[in-house]
Amino acid sequence: MTQKRIALVTGGNKGIGLETARKLGEAGVHVLLGSRDPARGDNAAKTLVEAGFGAECIHLDLDNAQSIAAAAESIRERFGRLDILVNNAGIFDFGDAAPGKAALDAVRRVMEVNFIGTLAVTQAMLPLLRAAPGARIVNLSSSMGSLTENGDPDAPYYAQRFIGYNASKASLNMLTIQLHEELKDEGIKVNSVSPGFVKTDLTGYGELTPEEGARLPAEYALSADVSGCFVEPNGITPW
Image 1 (cartoon, rainbow, N blue to C red):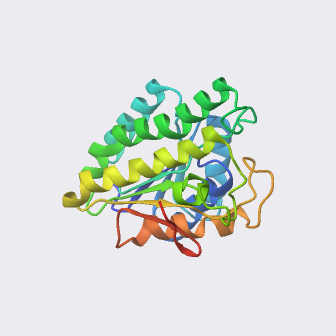
Image 2 (cartoon, helix red, strand yellow; image 1 turned 45 degrees about the vertical axis):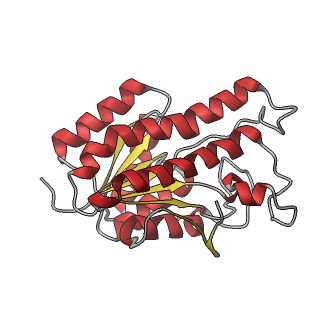
């Protein structure tokens, strides 16, 4: 059984997830790249292995309970624990919009993956996280999930009204708060991290590269000494 820390990064085959995995690999962590598409996940893991890091793909579809259970069992059998969980995987649906116009199917799909799927993965991995000393959970959130900023006309993303996506990230923040309260006596640190406005396949445009966006998630995954926080590159984000 490896003595390296073991990390699972959901949605780890591209974008912020892959770059977070790279930074964890640079720190000597053995990284499992959760990927809905095993072929893409294998290709991504290969790039990390070729760079000298410990990495491999693990099939994981947040919308498929069987794949989540199988991933947890595989990690248990091979490693017996999980030191780091980075809940990075998420989607955006272009049917999403302001509450009066959003397609309900789009809202339902976004909530199902971004929140329910993340909750399902976290529940499945909790026994493994509890088996590790000082485990950490990082939930990839967004300032668009801040209730305070959604109600502030001076906030930078005030006009970005996507009821499904914004609500899914607000729900993810609730998960962070409640997990922190549930786990604080067990030494497991849980934080919401907004990486900033990153250009990815999800956004199509942004101010930061995925590598820049991965800095904060990796930092909190590796060395967080706080828990129950919502942070972004400029500091603390209001709930």
